[in-house]
Image (cartoon, rainbow, N blue to C red; front, side):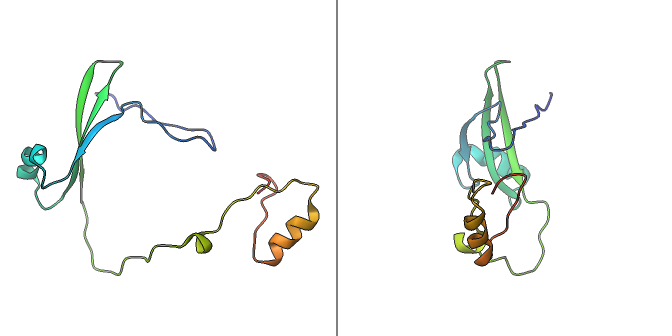
Length: 110
């Protein structure tokens, strides 16, 4: 079985070559067989279709490591920041953005 590489150019959304038909979680009936193999580590079971090769695949997500620690709190949008495109001639706008803590990336124009 080959594993197709999924790549995207900057700014494009990744589309998996094998779309997901459905996802089952451990307590659901269709995941019973996988639960028997690894009940504590099972996160989900997914069924994918490869239309090109006319095949169906069953994939699983397993927990492979567990350790103590505090989870990171979710970041709010204001803490993550946003990217805004500013035209190169808009020097004044760039200076205003920098004045409130913004960072300028001249290669990307954001």
